[in-house]
Picture (spheres, helix red, strand yellow):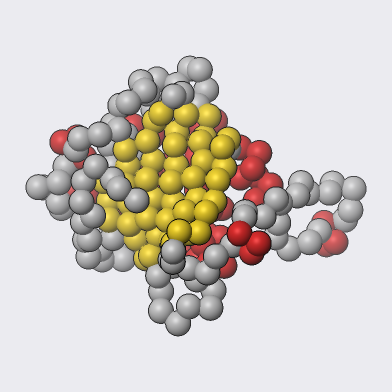
Length: 192
């Protein structure tokens, strides 16, 4: 995935918040970055996914999105990124990495995710299914609802295996009241 800036890896102590760590990078301030995108590269583990999500949703430009758009973005990214950790790298003996790029394009937030884990079964994202509200809570199956939410909240969802890479792309439609003008830099560039 080609972000406008070269990948930059930063050692991040686990006891600090992302915004504190960004403040410690004076040569790489978010408001100086070119291009309408957020680029992240981070280890494929639950803690790093949580830190990456915190960074995205706490970014000032993302907070300017409507509350519904912010919630949809956080929910979709959490489902996608956690699925990568839990499934694509489930059998890996060494932790892999995840790359994420977000940018505003044609009234939607374009999201591209790359990992080097196992390919998706049957070469395509699972369809997912809505929860069955007619069964008792204890009879609900484990899993499957995340992909239903992803399919429901996104548009143009595509997956392809490119050599050893999984590439998932989708658009997250933005509400008409979105104050983030098209092509505006979203403001965060973070690589762990």
